[in-house]
Amino acid sequence: MDRVIHNSYILALDSKKSMREVCGKNYKRKTTHGRISWNCSTYLKFGKAFCHTKQIPEDILLSIVTEVLGLTKFDETVFEQKIKEIQAIDSNLLVFVFRDGQTVQKEWQNKSRSESWNEKARQQARERQLKYLERRKASCIQQEQ
Image 1: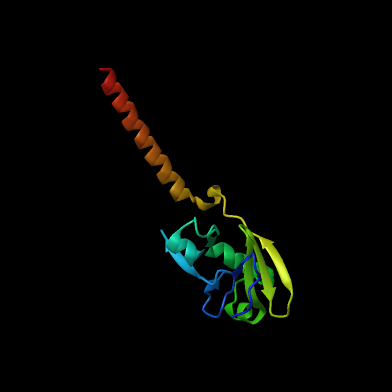
Image 2: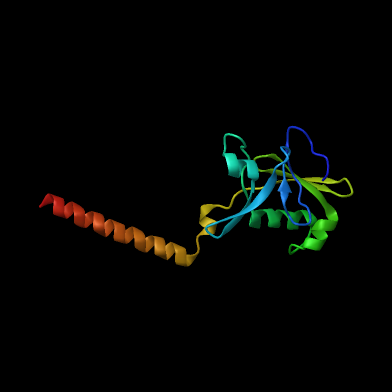
């Protein structure tokens, strides 16, 4: 694989889309509750005390890659042809290194919680809260009697 830069986290996507950081450990694609993200395997195996990198949600990573490549939709072939590696310099900063030597820095942010709720989820949460309040109210009335 390509040389790594010291004192920064290096993510290198090879043709199988595995990621690697400066410690030499691969990033792993992890699915939790239907959400896909990329995490350092050191973090996954030993925890936050050994690696403080943030997980990168795959949908955010793919949208940033698409934006950096100037595409409207992610294209794996174009990605493999143009991108040499991705460096995660800081918690939310990615540096894309192109095969021609060009670099592009992109800052990413986790989605706002308000964006992750659809109308069905909002309604279910509303109903759960109403049931909880009803039970709590009934419990208070029983204690007073």
